[in-house]
Image 1 (cartoon, rainbow, N blue to C red):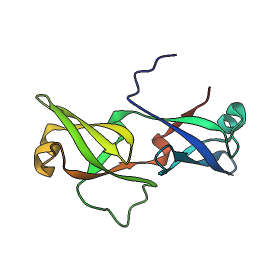
Image 2 (cartoon, rainbow, N blue to C red):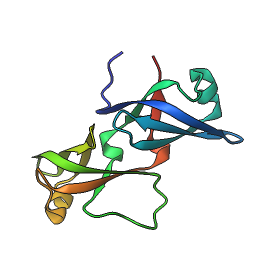
Image 3 (tube, helix red, strand yellow):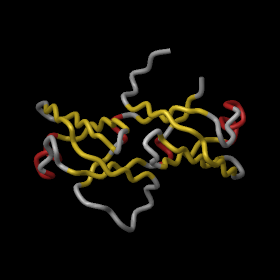
Image 4 (cartoon, helix red, strand yellow):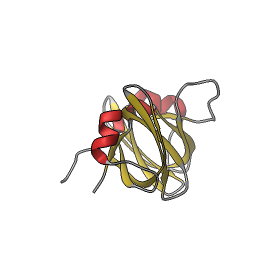
Length: 139
């Protein structure tokens, strides 16, 4: 199956923490980074997720935020340091490519944000992704 989701990160489940309706699933990406997905318990069961399961973490590029310095005091679980590898700017929006320690990420943000943050190839950034915006796929 082909998907329009730009961010498809392979990894391995390291922990499943079930709650009443939702679960958090921790995933170690190929580069060693940790990612957390908050998905339904039903999805965990349907996908058969257990530690050791191979998965792809899926994140829409519009759900990736960027900062130019480490961010403290936020509830966002997924904070991935990286470096901008390219910027494609349009009239209102921009597509920013990031190498997050081997994990290629794409963020779609406003052109204004690119300008204010001074984003261009080589600029260090931190990608921020809410755990509720991470989907998991198997197979």
